[in-house]
Length: 400
Picture 1: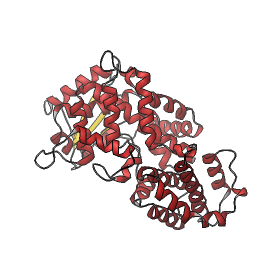
Picture 2: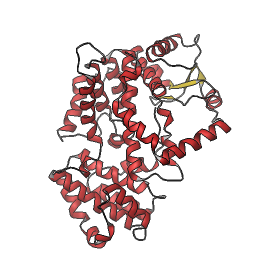
Picture 3: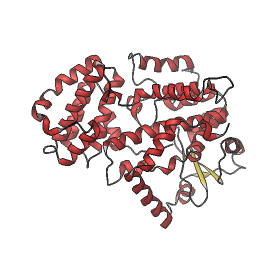
Picture 4: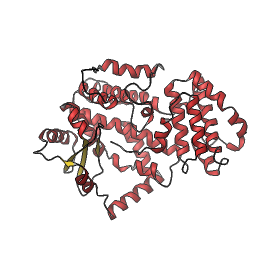
């Protein structure tokens, strides 16, 4: 089995759609021209801020890299680096000057077992092999020209599926599901010692089952605001990898790739705004709150501008018209709509609405204090931490 054969189907589909988008094309061309004219100096920065891991210094890590290079078909000379950090992290950079660079935090190298680290190495190589750096997510989301809300949500969705592909690449290299799951547990919890907390795969996956059953206990294992970031929530990643491990891609006679992709897409739907098209009572309550919330946020900036009207129409569909609404009356209904969603929707569903409102707000120019007050009021009413909004508005977006 070759690396391309295990890549997540939605990563491929959404990536192709994004690469055809006019704004994405324009930003990509601009970034490519900038790099061609003046390289970003990745190697220079790494040499000055971290330690290059030579083969003599770290033969085991290089042995893992060699294994992953062979399994995944990495096609460039490689340089590995370590930097001082208490956070577990690793990153693969867009190739520069014909070299591929991968960086690991010191705590990750010291705390992960061999097969756990093999998963991380394969994951980072996966981003390169699958061309994930071809879509400059950070430049698009943090650039001067804000992307339309629908494009921003597409980018968030694609990056999550890109992480699923990279996870598969890592699991393909490690070929040890227990080690892979343990690595993700460590990344989510920060725990490495068995002295106080013993990893239990069944209990870890049960956290996902409880999310799906709407009996969540948020914040256990990973911060609540991370559930709807550019990365899938860790139990989702483990469950997706468990499905992958049981598929024909990893063992003869397993679930077909087509069935695997359907299962993964259904599970990842927990992180998508399906309520905009849903027909259940809960979906309707969420949709009505989203409309009122979006109008309230837009109106907080001295009335709803033509640009904001266009954003809302794009988000809600051509049939949507702000002019047909009584804006003041709609905003007056906001407390009641918040109450209905809080009473009937799960925490993950409530978080989804807050997340999407923040994406819409961020799609315009710099968010104003008045808009932020409205977003915080909605989050407070839904018992959702304000940090979810702050994270989305201010964090850097990148694949790692």
